[in-house]
Length: 268
Ligand SMILES: Nc1ncnc2c1ncn2[C@@H]1O[C@H](COP(=O)(O)OP(=O)(O)OP(=O)(O)O)[C@@H](O)[C@H]1O
Ligand SMILES: [Mg+2]
Image (cartoon, rainbow, N blue to C red; front, side, top):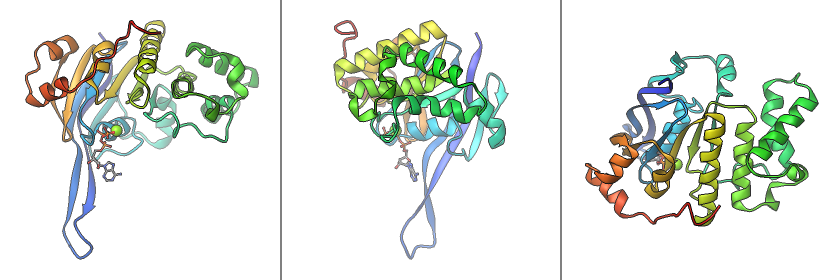
């Protein structure tokens, strides 16, 4: 099966000054030699406690921040050193969804402007009708009506806003979505709806996902494989069923023991 994404020995350290008068500086090893791959059409879970480096890894993989070391391959093409201009063409293939659907949608813009903005920036000479059609298709794909296009983000609930964020990513017809805790800020019943939406979109469009969570119960329903991350490193990895049935690392066992269960079948 084709690998859509492969990450090799990725590192990102943040410098920290020990004190105003200290000459030595230390560093936070946010991502410390991480390797993983994502198969086309599959979902890889990335799980770990707060501060273990998940968001840094997500951003470094998309080169929204520059990794210090390592390699990133997208469909076997090394994108680690591509220029900004070269990245622009490739970047539409992978999109990121953030945890906070309130902070990530600009309150000054209509839903139409938010979803179509990237498309317009990407190719300034795309016809207006084409942009409109693609925007309508994207909102309908996430289960919203085109009637919402003239409304503003504050008029919507958390779950609806997260649907709008997903539509904003889908408008590019991406191949891979990096979902950085996409349901953590939502009520449990709404979490299940968004997870079901993501599962359906994956089936329909053959999308690949990197699904980031600190909550293992969410991962269980959507991920084919799971990587468990601690202090910038992957400490355990495997098929989801295997990780749940037989966690070998004590840290993974701890994460498993502290989870509330969500029931995907009670809602949607
Ligand atoms: N811009 C930055 N400058 C310095 N240190 C940072 C920066 N961003 C993150 N860090 C540190 O890097 C480490 C990893 O942070 P990161 O946000 O990637 O973790 P996370 O796993 O996404 O956590 P959470 O579950 O809370 O979102 C943390 O110790 C954090 O304090
Ligand atoms: Mg994070």
